[in-house]
Structure formats: C-alpha cells, structure tokens
Length: 169
Image (cartoon, rainbow, N blue to C red):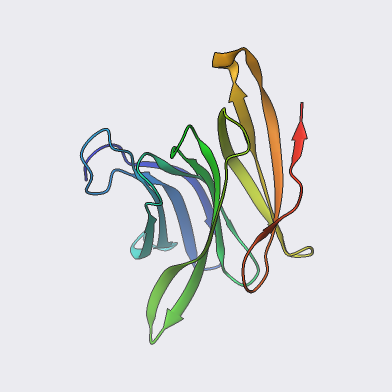
C-alpha cells in the first residue's frame, strides 16, 4: 500500500472482531485513503473479510465501528471532498455458501457547514432503529470555536433519513 494505514476503532460479536480505519490503498502518497473495515477471527486474528470504500478523492476515514443486533455494521467518520464532510456507511455482514461478505448497504454524507465536520464516534440503538453519530464542527481557523455535533440517522429498509441534527454550542 501507499500512504498511511491507521486502525481507529473496533467492535466485536461472539466470534469475530471488526476493525475500522483507513488505508492508502493503491493510491500515490498524498492522494488520500479509503475507508477500511476488516472482519477477523477472535481466536487467532486471521482475516476473514474486508470492505473498502473510496467515495471521493481525499481521505476517507472510519473513526467508529458499531454492530446492530442483526450483525450489520455502521461506520462513522468523514471524508475530505470539500473541507471535511460527515459520513456514515452501513455495511451488510453475511455468510453465503460459507464465504464471509461485507457489502455496502447505504452511504450517508452531510456537509452542514463551510468548516471541518467530522464524526468521531457513534452507537446503534436497536430500540429506535437509529444510529447516533457524534463529532464536531471545527471552524477555529476562521475564529469559530469547535462545537459538538450529534446526528440521529434513522435506518429504513430502503434508505436512511436524517432527523434534524442536534448541534450543541
């Protein structure tokens, strides 16, 4: 791989660990990176499946990995398409004919400000069928202090919908 490879988050079920971060892929140094998720055996760390997503030029980072009760994975992070945009990616986690597969189910992006917006964590709430992503908006280079950002993204069979974001100042 070119560039940096960084693991940022981990979650687990009974048999596997799920590690998220970014990698340099096969891209020249300085051109960004891909969101990366790996499914590994708990017993020996062996790689079982991987998922990469390069939605746009620039860095694509997974800062948090969370499982729902159905075994799907939610990746919260950001990309730098224009500044930094908030991103949540839902990944299906299936086994077909003995082969483990991680596949894109949907991709949510939001660029609510002209500043740097990043998700750094999140949790899936099975009771409300929602993913809560947390992070910040950082405009300090423009004289605006960083602010907390919390978004609830509801999950439906067809596509995610976004409730009004909760912005704490």
